Amino acid sequence: MPRKNDLEQQALQIIASHGKEGIRQRDLWRALGASSREGSRLALRLERKGLIYREQELYEGRWTYRLIAKHQPPTFDSLVGVPCIACPDSDKCYPGGMISPERCERLEKWLLQNAAKAASKNPGEEVAEQ
Ligand code: SF4
Image (cartoon, rainbow, N blue to C red; front, side, top):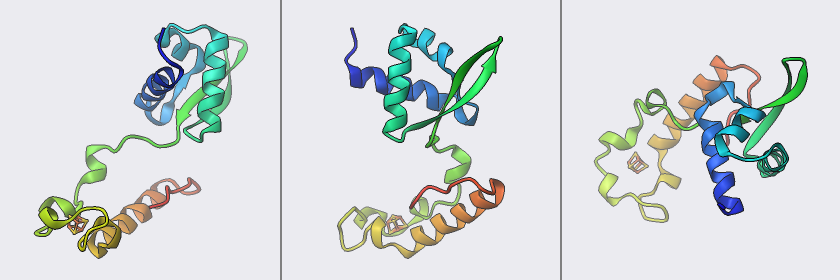
């Protein structure tokens, strides 16, 4: 039997793989081979950890939840133009170093531009902190 954290990780990967549409709770349980009781507890744990959100929906006359990952994996399009790809300092850049992503103006500018683009595409949606 998989450990609790393994099952959570597996569930989160499945939920995230369904993108912004998410997945119905019961479809997730089936994919995991879990009971509805185990599945409900798992969804609640993921929600409490802030990794997913649940939206109630009516399906075939019964209320259920749709599970949606809060953070979607990056798409190829979202990485177009990242300055690190063509950066002359990339071999000297590392977290905590003299040259680092935490203090990089080029990266910060690119992130802010992408956040602004995302906000204009999805008004009202929360933009992840950078
Ligand atoms: S974070 Fe900045 S300095 Fe580091 S590789 Fe990316 S663009 Fe270059």
